[in-house]
Length: 218
Image (cartoon, rainbow, N blue to C red):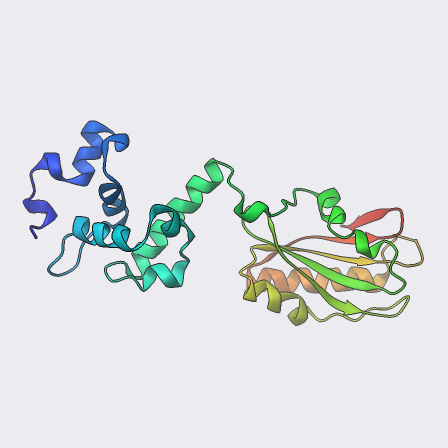
């Protein structure tokens, strides 16, 4: 198989895209541009063809980093390029994965936490979000007494790392009905936010929920 540089300019994917536009390129030519280079004995177009013979375009969109990087001729850097391109397109088209709920504000978060309104004990719950603010996981970290709840940051962030969350929203209920934050609530919020800063996972907000109200801890 000839190297890309040995092909005429009209057959090279990048040059073809420049002169004819991306809509006139074949699937393997578009993928070849993302891959960039081939491997010994195979140019990038041939690698792209092999990938598309094994994986449909829809299937390719669903492959994660590990699956992509293990494909012969792809590797780590090219897998990152493909995933970044896919994610950018998804965001531009506002595509939601599996109809996951989007959390844009405290009201959206509280809507996912209605079970806390009438709970007789304090529940500390974390909502784990992806980079598009979609809810990918919810976990009850602790169930305490009527007026106390001990939570350690490691228990909050372990699921975040496991589920590759970009950010989290933490919440707990006050069975008393009073949504004012206690000193313990404020201290816990500060500790969790500090831990998030260190790990690189944003703590968007801490919400206190009662049977008929809620309040964000600033």
